[in-house]
Length: 180
Image (cartoon, rainbow, N blue to C red; front, side, top):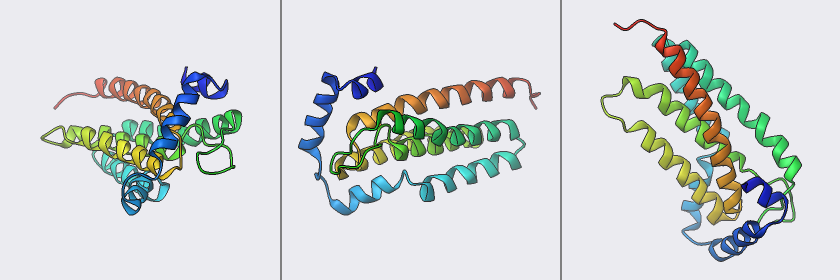
């Protein structure tokens, strides 16, 4: 529905643009920049890479593979959508802003890493931290004017689906391993 509203210039898109124009530039400039950078490949991918390496060392090769495949699917899904929708950015004449690639990268990398390391933690803090990092990235992108709010929300929906599929595959592969 979000993609349809953005592509068809629907009422939700109009609301999205009015909201963005009211909130862009709010917040400390340096902080919002740092938050937006949490979704860059240079920050998010090493986190996922470390979690994948840890999972492989612990014998969870299938789960590590599913996390890596989910991350590989991000550009494969996001890039064609950006081209198809061809949405202009909030503060630029350039197009290709829907959905947000930085949000997608952050969500899949941080939540994927959390899914991989959670079985080895005594407390379940990894997923709340991953969600917080994804939200922080999203807030930074919107407040900096790099993306409209619906660009970010569209990525949440897309990557939520990716992570759900990855999680289902992970649970299936884990259920076949003997317990100790």
